[in-house]
Image (cartoon, rainbow, N blue to C red; front, side, top):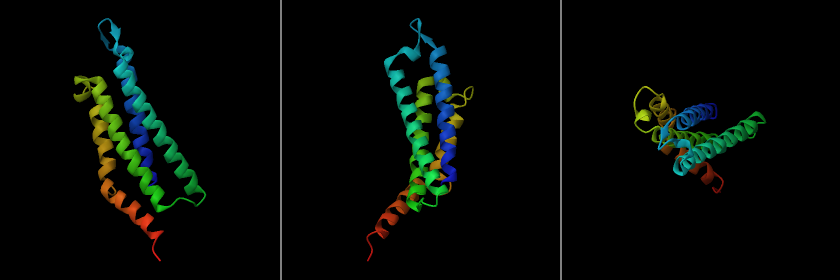
Amino acid sequence: RLVLSGGPLGLMQSALDITLDYVHQRKQFNQSIGGFQLVQGKIADMYTKLSACRSYVYATARASDKGHASNRDCAGVILYSAERATEVALDAIQCLGGNGYINDFPTGRILRDAKLYEIGAGTSEIRRMLIGREFNKDYKN
């Protein structure tokens, strides 16, 4: 599970890179749409989700290298990263408007790939169940 959590990081970084390029090239009302406050808000959200996930993945990987990562941590990091990657991909599509939806830009593929991380190798629901069970083990007998 821990190894899988790196994939969503790459997807989020790609989505952010594509979005940043697009919003600074696309003009509306004689200015780039990157100057609009709502677009800036989406960019800020995308960036902070990526940064939080990166920190979580790296911290869990360091703990794993030292033999300290638990099943709960490994399930949590892929759960969180996968779901945030889907959100970031959706934000990228929103920022690109109609262009985000068509195949001329890779944002649609990024969304499909991100969603696969929520489904493949155990669904988000299964990951939540696993995390809950790990906590319950702490309170048995």
